[in-house]
Image (cartoon, rainbow, N blue to C red):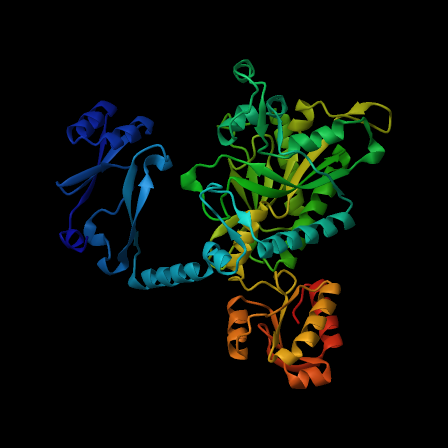
Amino acid sequence: MVKIIKRKLPVIREEVSRDEAEKRIQAIKEHYKLEILAEIEEPITIYHLGEEWWDLCAGPHVENTIDLNPDAIELESVAGAYWRGDETKAQLQRIYGTAWETPEQLAEYKRRKEEALRRDHRKLGKELGLFIFTDPVGPGLPLWTPKGTVLRSTLEDFLKQEQMRRGYQQVVTPHIGRIDLFKTSGHWQKYKEDMFPMMADDEAERTAEQGFVLKPMNCPFHIQIYKSELRSYRQLPMRLAEFGTVYRYEQSGELGGLTRVRGFTVDDSHLFVTPEQLDDEFLKVVDLIRFVFQSLQLKNFRARLSFRDPALDKYIGSDEVWNKAEGAIRRAVETLEMEHFEGIGEAAFYGPKLDFIFQDALDREWQLGTVQVDYNLPERFDLEYVAEDGSRQRPVMIHRAPFGSLERLIGILIEEYAGDFPLWLAPIQIRLLPVTDETLPFVRQTVAQMQAAGIRAELDTSGERLGKMIRNAEKEKIPVMAVVGAKELEANALSIRTRASGELGSIAVSEVIERLKTAITEYGVF
């Protein structure tokens, strides 16, 4: 690479016909390039590196290889990769490299890459014993260990309690449903390729598309609950909420730890509102999402107005309802004076969204919370309510998920905290370290007291020396450690050491319990 750069080879753009491109590719027997050529829209361009090499490329490129800095490039790794990400096709070798304008930029990139490896949720998830993936179960299907399940449950309980305070009603729906349900919603027509295959009793049902599918979305099920009886305007807004697990057949090459999986749980809710209630309810949902982010210490985010692209045909519904829905979202961000930007083409097929794009500690962007305005599904499912004047009117739906995917959120939190969870989220909040066997009865009694008070406490039963027990607790990122020796036993106290504040000295057991309860309840530190 360095030799080529120093030869000062010009990079030359050539525009060719499709027939000419096909002729040249066949001459060099590059059958993979023929597949790519078939998908390229005109104009078709080829870039030449001097007179020795060429390739199909849209460009643009530097004008000459001398424009590249040989001290700011690096080859990183080699790995196997299926052609087009399809595991049924040939496996090729992929070479990974990176190029920057200056050596300083390359050095910063390498530093950030090392930090990303240190924070990698797949690595930390295994080290902290939170979740696993296994070949017998299949890729993209995480198995949650007891510690990981505590983390999930804590997040769920946190949001459920806050939703209850805000007037939400919890529901539970099945994991599968009839295809007809998803034909009515439009998912079967617009989303079929991302759904798991149909299950049918016989070939006749399969041919007629009359079977069942794993649900990719929860909204059609919540709609059925709303539609189970005629609603009055007095019952609206109706806010139905569920931690519903959905299934999407992501390509194996696109899977990545918890951030891209095939089965995931959405903190889903669907609000059925009158048109007059829409703006106020939308603002309340945004307030909930901001509260969630604040509680999770996620501060660096922007709002994206995810609108449709009129040039695409992937949407359902009339221009009128789309304009009404997009107007409601725009009014909300302007009322709240939120920093925002537009994402044309990022809308769901049934309605526009307000997406919260979070920037993590490594400056990567992730979509977390989302809220959507939907006039289309109420129309497609013929939803009604009895208005104050006795007439039948159409409600508006708000889809919302403050967490988004629970799996993705946990993956992001692991990396954002580098596995060092705040006290209220930590699977183990305090570990007691007995110095001698004589203290064990007292330590067991103290652990039982803490657990009875709702504190996730555990006893180190390893029998290791104190220094090793402390190192193990540090490695497992336990927020609070309590050393118990002869002095503590006599004083009915614990010698407290925390990750946040270091050594705190000897504190009475009763005070430790009260301080822990307060810190956990207020999402604070000990």
